[in-house]
Structures are given as structure tokens and as C-alpha cells.
Image 1 (cartoon, rainbow, N blue to C red):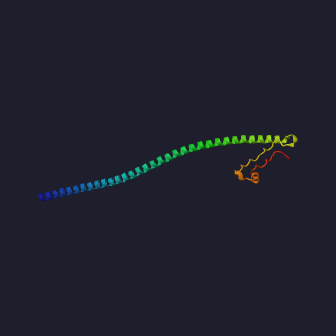
Image 2 (tube, rainbow, N blue to C red):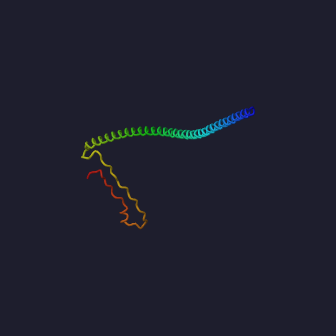
Image 3 (tube, helix red, strand yellow):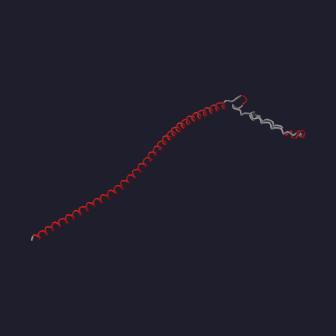
Length: 166
């Protein structure tokens, strides 16, 4: 019986060792599987982080471009305000100048009306129109071949006095 109990104890020990080895292998396989799962998740997370970093850089670049454009628009707005203020000042100046000219024109019309209402001796109007004398025409140079008729054509016309009553 000793032999049989030794074999059976050895069989039990061997079975326990086999079961322990199988349990250890299963445990190692589970650990390896978890490590591989964690590695896959790490790779996916790293990829998502890289994508998010690239998107963040692109957003920062867009924000910098938007800030630059905003600064340019602020500068342009400032220049437009300066131009507007200059235009308003110019318009006010022109309005004042126009009012002065209008006042001068009104004053001149009133003075003309007063002068027209007065009469000069002999019934002449107060304002006479200037007399325009025609300019003499240049004489053509003909040498000795000229005739009296061509000389008469070249003579200036008599002056007409438009301001004198007849």
C-alpha cells in the first residue's frame, strides 16, 4: 500500500503542480492581455492627443491671424474716423464759406439795386456797360502788289460804343 499511496501522493502533487502551472500560465496570459489592451488604449490616446495638439495649434494660428486682422481693422477704423472728422471739418468750413459768399452776394445785389434806383443826370443808368473796341486785324504783307481794295479789307472796322445812347 505504500507504493500505491506514494504514487497517488505523487500524482496528487503532480496534478497540483500542473494545475498551479496552468493557473500561473492563465494568470500570465491574462496579465499579458491586459498589458496589450492598455498598450492599445495608450496608442489610441496618444493619437487622439496628437490630433488634439494639431487642432489646438491650428486654432492658435487662426486666432493669431484673426487678432492680426482685427488690429488691421482697428487701424483702418481709426484712419477712417480721422478722414471722417477731416471731411466734417471741411464741410463745416465750406458751409461757412458758402454763407459768407451768400452774404456778400446779397450785399452786392442790394448795392446794385440802390445804384439802379438812383438816376444820373440825362437819364443814364447808374451802371454803364464797358465799351469794347474791336482789335485791329493784322495787315497782310503783299509787297507792291496790293490794291486799294485789299487795303480797305485789311483796315479795322470802326468802334461801336455800346454804352452811349443814340
